[in-house]
Length: 499
Image (cartoon, rainbow, N blue to C red; front, side, top):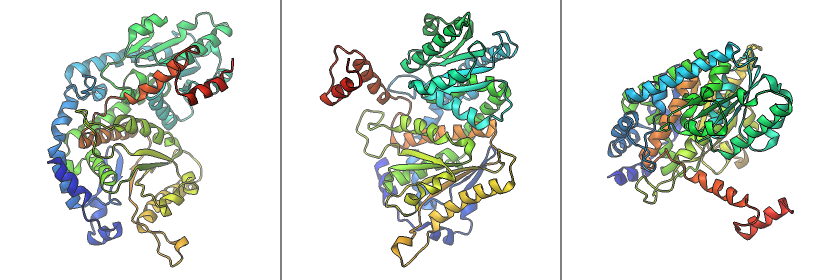
């Protein structure tokens, strides 16, 4: 039955975007939605009443409602690993027992933040947060987006094993006034632990009396952190049912709470909880994550769009495309269904993007006149993040809005080199202000959108076995005496390590 719905979606007759607006004078308001201080404009996409009806049928056939209930009820929706996906419980939505556990662990984190603020871990001016993937991307995004410059602590998030990422931080910070935060769900992540050892070596070289007394561990495997030598009182656990790329709401957000203040962290949770409530209660034809996923799937399946571009017209959100790359491509970059059958549809698009207006002078040539059809997503903030002349922000926003209009309308010319075909879709997400609460709601929107996309495709968004193979190969290569791989790889290894 779902196959029939997909056939209808793929064969849906399309009008040009300009024609859709001409046919419906109310289109802009019909496909514009306010939620949690954010305005979502879906009107410059090819979604129409008929296509929406077909997607609603597909959602029923894929039991989107039942699967959503299962997600929030703590059922093992991660079928391949046999566990729940309870990141929403961290912000108060889910099983009572899971919410209570999250509250208790958050209170423990709040107590440690208070102790550090009170100087119980000696004077701290600097924080080095080490993690990788979700253990770093979320904290780094939030810190860059929400810092205003008067924070008590200067915090650096380092993820790359490349020493060039860490060394400048060590040169700038004072070892005796630095707190080391190690974020790793399993506490076995080799890149993170190697970086941590380098920080400890630096502290010892700088004559810090007790380097291990300046460590906080964020992990779902506290026993492993204890084995590594960290005192239990400075280990902040989180639930095994919270996936890494969904973990910013848990103790992985400790550095955010410490740097920005615990009130800001709780505001972020409150904003996400508002989006959770909307996702659970709103009818699908008015449900923001659901509508966004319908649009995603239309372009992926009917128009064979292999990529989706995200452009933040706000320097504070420059890391959002990176964050979404992991969230969407690690979740939905699959080639088999939940049942292990080959996926007959296109999986996650390649997510890429940048910052406006820089991107306009780089990649927008392709978006306007290239042969690839690329759905575009614009993000902007009404309230500026600076105190310079208003012309800065006005120019920024007008550029953002103009790009969406130009992609849609195009401009005909007898000169083929100056012809803009138009009819190129975009979504615009407009925040009233970039605050912890609105950013929390925005990130939760993207989480639920990713989940709905997975449900429509029939895949499991909560495992990531594809990440493991490269790590396994790296482990084999680290043994210089054996574990031979292909000839090309062996030659590269010999060139890099001739000894």
